[in-house]
Length: 247
Image 1 (tube, rainbow, N blue to C red):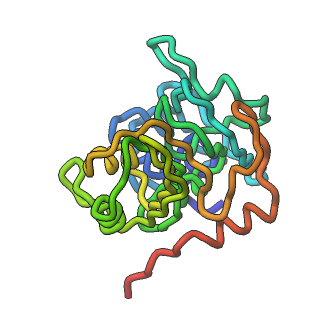
Image 2: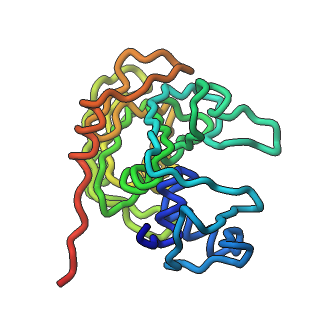
């Protein structure tokens, strides 16, 4: 068969996203036929031996990928395992014929919609900032929010030395000492929503992701998973902004 770039092969197998594969290659953790792989190296995945940290990967032309949605509860970290003994989202996953990985992360105390897949290319499209896939959060903040704070959130604030992209902000409910709002972002920076709120002087009391692009959490119970339907897969793929090809 035609030779394929090593990072794409790893993503096609479903081990991780293409970007993560490039990181692993850069760290010399990927080997092809016993030799350290190079980013962009082309291989024949049906003939060449690929290992990551000594574990052999197997390539199949007819691989059937898995796409899952979880309602992540608070108190679980988005990781495959944890050396500190904390609970991991993988403990809540059903048995699958192929290994699945989380698409992005929700921190320990954030709950809601979390995707899992064995399709590394799909994961890369969902996470890459240039694809502009929206993430919708329901945020409970204290003590109140004023117009100035809402405008700052919508226009972008500086976190970790960089300004966030414009966001959509909508106040859903106001009660004594707290406000529930909906925040839509199109980035995936570390603890972004919490840091955005902190930057304008708001304390986050509860944070829940309720939608990922056109995918909605709906009535899925906390700690449970379900497979994405064919219609949902088509919708989320259609929501991905295609990269502009240079001439």
